[in-house]
Image (cartoon, rainbow, N blue to C red; front, side, top):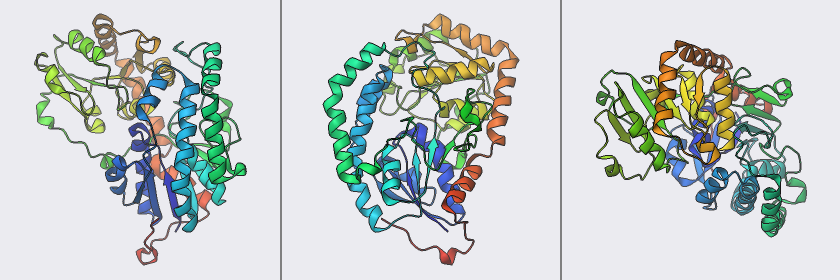
Amino acid sequence: MAKIAFLSLPQYGHVFPEMPIVAELVRRGHQVTVFNEARFEAISRATGAAFIPYPDVMPHAAFTRALTEGDLVWWLQLLLTATADMLGPLLKPLEQDRPNIVVFDGIALWGEIIATRLRVPSVSISTSFIFAALDDPSGKLPPFGRWVISFWRLFHRFVWAWCKMALHAGVRSLPWRMPFIPRQGKITLVLTSKTVHPKTPLLDSPRFAFVGACVDPSSRTERFDFSRLDGRPLIYVSLGTVLFTNQRFFESCIAAFADFPGQVLLSVGPGTDLSQFAGAPGNFIFAHSLPQLEVLQRTAVFVTHAGLNSMQEALWYGVPMVAVPHTPEQARNAVIAAKAGAAVVLEAEARQGHVDAAELRAAVETVLAAPSHRQNAAALGRSLREAGGFAAAADRIEEVAGIRATSSAAEIAHFTY
């Protein structure tokens, strides 16, 4: 039995694929405590794990803007500043009740620092492809000169964040090893398959374990009245939980599919005023959020932002896609799916333009007309299943911890921080 501290990232695209791993570790008898923002408490506790909230230090609106503008220097400064503010509240209780192992999201920089400070083994989890930051098929990243300007503009914040991290954790615990993102533990669990991942020498590195997609419908709490679907072909549209404020894109969807001989289901994001869609054609259904795994099982074409989690959930169920990436990372994901014949890519949003109704309708009809798109998606989905998923991930965590699970519930003590 291991005592495991699991430090996640407060983003649904990271939490959803990680919670099945937590649930599997709990099922094996390990004592797991999940650390995340308070809004993720319910989904975390549903796994059977304990939960400790992060301090409220993540400026999510700024993170989103930095990503959409392609300003990775600003994004990195925000990450370092949040890490500096996170360490103090987290280190003290963890030092008092030391875990056997720290598992952390590869973007959760504080996870690696804490593991190093505590001198315990660690496993990182990468929910994105491993690739160089400058490899940008969207052409959206700013010129190098703009990065230099951004760095000097924010230099004082970098210095202050670095000093504050050193004050809390010590200089030796700071993240010196490259690449800077994602951070690596003793091993890094990459939540995709070698078939889906772009080719890189790292595919054969013993430091990376490609465990496939971690998909578990029981970990989802969203609900939808599926009697509203009438059996006609379904187009499912979602821009995820970060970029859903692109109302102009939703307007393009309405114009594109007003006469579509099927239904269109749109996830328009929490807090969105649904009354603005009151005049939409009768074949449209709008919802703040949806049980995506159940929806995908009924979907003919998925119109997606191509976040890796959403993309791989579609592949898991063999659903072809029209990818509308908004960020450089999403553009890379979309290109991989398109090269494999599982998606058609519309790049305008990633180039700070807009996808119009005509090209969106044409892309969906292209996917529907060619059965090969669904066949190719299904082939990639099989590779994601065969890699082992959350069970394989739990196996590797146990290996690093050096402790196997116990079947005796009596041996499991209450684990809190």
